[in-house]
Length: 62
Image 1 (cartoon, helix red, strand yellow):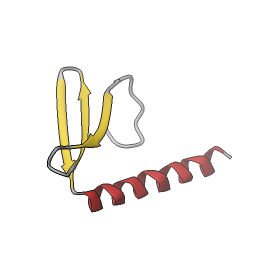
Image 2 (cartoon, helix red, strand yellow):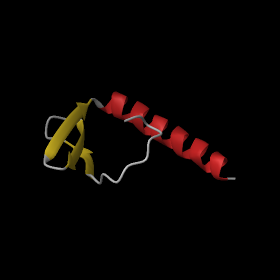
Image 3 (cartoon, helix red, strand yellow):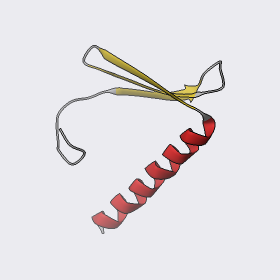
Image 4 (spheres, one colour):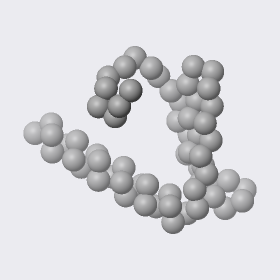
């Protein structure tokens, strides 16, 4: 499956700080759980990438 492939899979997404000062992205879907920890600088870079993708998607809708 690629980033541009549609599917009917649903997942829960949680994002928050950990007690060790990391940022955790936690994904749960179909009995699988994935926890990804990032230092705050990496998390900020990911947030920038998400915002850039959202802006690009908005441009495609126009």
